[in-house]
Image (cartoon, rainbow, N blue to C red):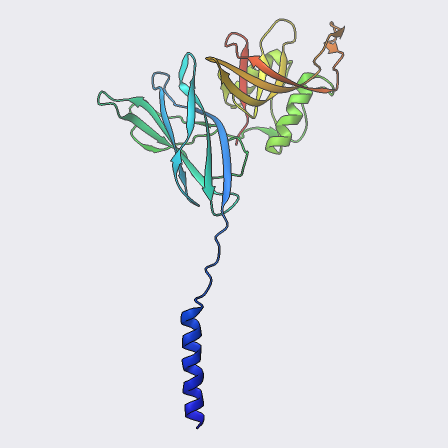
Length: 270
């Protein structure tokens, strides 16, 4: 009798399992958008494309456009679907074109972990004849400091504070704004002629010059513009002392036309 009951219970269990299969667990996915500037290491190698390898989801092409007059530099953006909010990605940057129409070289960045909305700038350094291979494709965070080398209230102090907020430390960059790009180069930082999000933009103009923090880059009707967050912007209060009505205050500025004769960009490591 007991055996019969057990067999009956087992049969009922099998019948219920057949009618009500296990419910599949839904997989959570995340949309992660990144953007930035990529630079091929040889000026004659125009950017041909940016392929995004996604170790936590699907791979895809990034949208991009080349900087006018600087075809080896391009601004890209992409949104990937990933199984985690901080996926590991890699950029494959096509540089130069062969006679048959293919990429002459593919510069492979090291894998990096990122998050939604984060700027990811990559500059790949190598020799012109090198084939596909991994590169150190980001600025090196060299020569950092624990203090701000600027004077509080001035544009230099404000830009260096924005750098610290982004990187976590101050760069060893000194002098008036007009000298900061030269100081950065001397201390091993990457200084570019094209706009990068998360960079300090130097205005190499007369007097003390000016410096701000780049927050956006765009191209409209064939011309490139950038936005910046600057301190000490306004009309003069004491020109000899370099003090304006915006002293010790930040101001957001938009649609600043990129001018290669004036602007230099000190790129923060990402």
